[in-house]
Amino acid sequence: MEPHRGAGCHRCPKSRAKVDQAAATFNATDYAASPAASSVCNFNTELGKLRQFGECRHNDVLDGIAASTCTATKCGLKAEYFQTLAGDLTHDFTKATLKLTRTDAMINFDWGTSAPAAGLPADGFQIRWSFIHATATTEAYTFYTQTDDGVRVFVNGTQVINKWMDMAATVENTGTINLTAGVPVTITVEYYDNITTASAKLSWSSASQCKQLIPQARFAPM
Image 1 (spheres, rainbow, N blue to C red):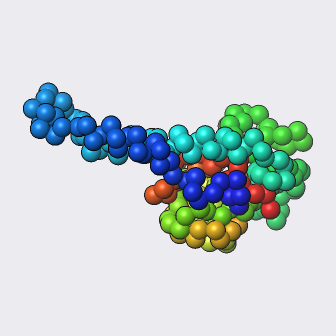
Image 2: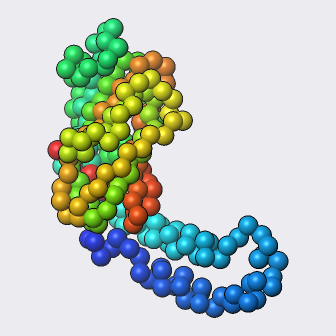
């Protein structure tokens, strides 16, 4: 869930106020007469970017502070690591062998050609991450994955991403779903590695949440 950050901290009013105060000194007439007016810059566009930048950095600081209070039972994801059944091209979890269960801080891994943990092969493994989360705002959230190889994402049992196939991590997959403020949801991410390199990343964004790798303090392990 999101016990470490109140809804009142979701925005950064002081940062926005400073940006707006500086913007108030802008003179549209002078700007129109300046060389900048014919460039690619647009004042309102750049102002919007600066407002968002301040809010994003503010939220990053809050996430960092929240992470300092995390423990294995308080934050993170339940992570189950499996060895794929030899010859199973479907990467069926019911046929795979569970080798390790632990709490991972976040989904941001690049194993290269190495095994993800002791007792697991470098090729032919699967991972299921599960966690509970409650957003601070009611809005549509977009989830992003970059994996080598396959990935599936479920929110309360609804599949929002389904790319259960061999692929490179350069491919970004997305899925969007509406979430209600304060209502806990169960999120499950399933992943498999076939051969050669392996990596996995999970990010999100919304109208009020800058795109980011989902940080440790936003997860509560199941």
